[in-house]
Amino acid sequence: MKAVQYREIGKGPEVVEIDTPEPEPGQIRLRVTAAGLCHSDWFVMDLPADQYIYGLPLTLGHEGAGVVDKLGDGVEGIEVGGAYAVYGPWGCGQCRACAEGRENYCTRAAELGIAPPGLGAPGAMAEYLIVDDARHLVPLGDLDPVQTVSLTDAGLTPYHAIKAAQQKLFPGSVAVVIGAGGLGHVGIQILRATTAATVIAVDLNEEKLALAAEVGAHHTVLAGPEAAEKIRELTGGAGAEAVFDFVGAQPTIDTARAVVAVDGYVSIVGIGGGLMPTGFFSTPFGVSVRAPYWGSRSELIEVLDLARSGAITVHTERFGIDDAVSAYEKLHAGTVRGRAVVTP
Image (cartoon, rainbow, N blue to C red; front, top):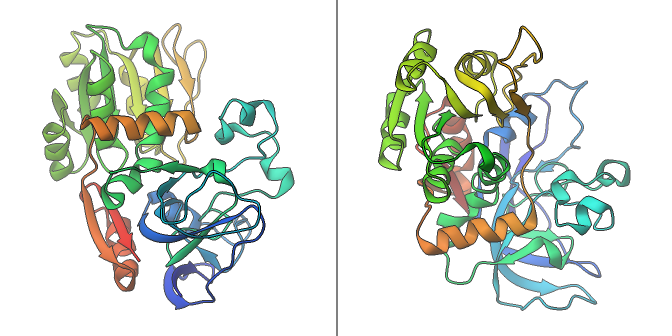
């Protein structure tokens, strides 16, 4: 089968031919109908050799959807021919967090060698994908897999971050979304669908700001030295009750710290490598700073229900598997409008 793999440190992705995998007992094989590209793929591929821990070759793709093609022995409750989305942050299934469906915060995955697809385990950027357990599949129903697959991360991750800040998102509050790309443009829609907050979008790219306005941002602000002052003006000097940084680079984190209100909330979702010092003389009184990771299985079900209701949609650019390398190049250059999806 064809697969998109990272095979050599520093070389980027390649389209290769590999053996089609067979499901072992308890496993499910999907014929992949859609696989999403993510900036975190490039974060992984940009790591130096001494920090890279994901194994080589690595089949990419931690956002996956497909049709069940074959079942391993003992699998129950999963239908051959059924369409499913893949819940990506696989855990042990036994610890307290996993028992609550919060496998994104599994306390034993690392020690047991359990890794998400595309981030250690073979991912969805291939014609077939092995899913380790039936609990990691969520029925798609009548949802279009190409339009839906990115919600397994680009929808689930902002939903998890926003849900944790619900107490700050009361009527009259302000939410700032920094980065209006793949995750940010979905986060804006989630804020509009689930809260009464006024949404301010911030980005370096005018086209992405246009997309932000298109999907519901009340105000847009061009990132740069004057962004914080502009946001303060829009909030009457008080700042924002909640700030969601979907970039996580030092300049964006500095902006988040500059615009958060007293007793506010900062969620650093992006993995751009920046840091925010907190405490007296650093952040305003009462400010909470959180670095969330992915989301729970129940939250993924809720995200798909939002999509089913029409409350959120993902703007996608579609590529065949033979064009996956050029899709990754566009992603790296920041020229993808919304989310890139490969259809093997």
